[in-house]
Image (cartoon, rainbow, N blue to C red):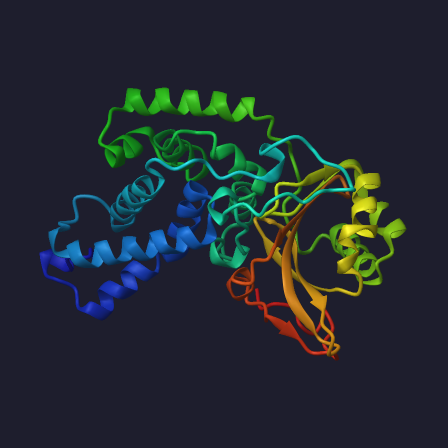
Length: 342
């Protein structure tokens, strides 16, 4: 059955809605890779659904419903990207700072890449090999590299390299030639190679070594035992804190920061979650009444059993509902009891 129904007969509204909604998660993932913003991706897909609903009577089944929706989503994303600067991470905004600070000025939300909970873009029933590829393609470093591509090259690389579309399928979606698609893919690959994208481990929930590492990190952070915490970091590990431009490298600088300006995090609680194919935590600051309030979403990057980056997205309470995390914890709550429904 197509959106126009069998034999060109219009599908009932409930059936049409079901057909559209079954593609929502993959469209959010596609739009997120294009836009680098969780909230803009959700908006883009909602607009895609609205346009599809309004124009479904003109869809005559000449392509699959999925291809038709991707064409609409692509146009929505290209419209949203028109004239915009790319989103980035602090490490791409300027030279590294030190543990002494300063934080710098708060920069607009539109400047930064945003984290995305795995559950909103990855289907748990996906084949394990395909799921590993999907996790790899939503890592922060991969998204940051994508942002260096012009929008249409971004479309081509995502559809060809991540979603495994054929060149002629991408050409049909973009209204271009196969030769043009292949040329765009070649240029996109060269740009991605030039960004110096480094490998990192994606989340493997059943991996005992990773669970042990994350348990040690959570324990060290909540006890504010910086000797233990920094022992889990690589020598060139980074700490960044959007929406501030400051970022720093190395256990010594990170320790200095956390004992200085960052000491406001002493006594915090962490709630495990997952984001961008990587381990993450909802970070809660203590409050005078003995409870805890939402402070940041930490996304960790890991390689070879060590933490290579702590990406701490500060002052973003809107992210907590996105992750299914509460905005406050009661005094008696523990991180284990408050783990998000993922």
